[in-house]
Image (cartoon, rainbow, N blue to C red; front, side, top):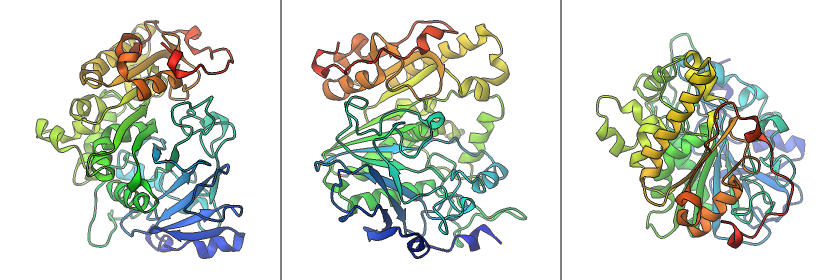
Amino acid sequence: QSVKSQCMVTRPRDSLSMMAIALIMVGGVTKGTHASHSDPGAPTGGPYFDLHVLEDPTARCLDGSPAAFYVGRPAIATTKWLLWGEGKAWCLSDADCAARAQSKDGRGGWTASGWPTVPGALPPTLPWADSPCFPGQTPNQAWGCQLSNDCTRNPAFCTFNMVYLKTCDGGSWSGNRSDESGVALRPGATPLYYRGRAILDATASALGKLGITNATEIVIGGGSAGALGVYLQLDHWNRTLNPNQDKRVVGLPDCGFFQDWDNNSYHQGFVWMQSAAGMNSVVDPVCRAAHPTQPNLCLMAEHLSPYITTPLFALQAKFDSYQIPHICGADCTTTVQKQAYGDALVTKLHATVLNRKGNGAMVDACYHHCAGYNTYKVAGLTQAEAVQIWYERGAAALPENGRLFSNATYPCAACCNPPPARPLRDHATLA
């Protein structure tokens, strides 16, 4: 049975109702709610993120199933919003995307996990305040606490409306294929949808009907491939959600500054992604004009960052445990080579992200990938503390004007030690 025929179910509430799950139509999405929630449009104050399945027929995952996101609302209504993009890497060829579309963990859609007959990779609710911080994740998948409503873990954003953007497009929301049938057909292969940009735009439209139109502050964040999505999509989110430019919009990418390093076919994979024969990925128009013969470069943070105009604070591991084996690869087999890769990353961040006034960055020296919001320290501050200072008081209130870089060399086991348990200090005393 083809992926297309499997995914023509656009109203999964009929199947899910057999499992005693309430699904409610709100603002162009099918909404799953926990039984204790009575008003899906109002702040719940409860411990759940509620599922919203997009009904826009153009907003499709790789496997053709409808894209989705989760919303968590605080007990006290607010006009502040945090959008957080899930990671799970990318697919960098048709074959890679076909395999991804059949993954049961949802990285290419929900059908392989049994949804909508069973919740599978898309349960109707996700826990909010329990440990670990990210909703629905197991401990070895937890990448941080930016989505926590615990103010000791997430002091800057714990009272915000929170949106968890599920990844299922394989391209950090950049794909833009749209043939007449709605399917990018490959002879003898699984039909695929490359619709990342359509998912983003449909999500923005749905969030408008859920109240983000009245927002005063919007933070666009994400981890890993979701963080690359922040670099790629931040200005587009700003234009889309903030058409009158009367809201504060900032970016918070966590471990998304993947270097352009041509090992393990990484660079060539992004060439395919941007090509018309691949995902036909949308890139920033100003960056594209600067790289007319290689627009694929604008899918990489080091080339795109000089053209991002929306303020951002970059969280990054200097010795990134994903990048070193998967991107640097054979060039990072020795300690000296790993040190050189980390040094190159720091140099590029300084030359790009930090070349714009008001931006900030925190780069620690632990060998890790994400998962450090309340753990690793630079200049005596955790990421959570540094982000709070930057967000509330600006880069100038931080040490080194918000350029927080660890000088430790690889390997640095001491850099990975978690801080001692203690109450978080008031932001006004942090410096």
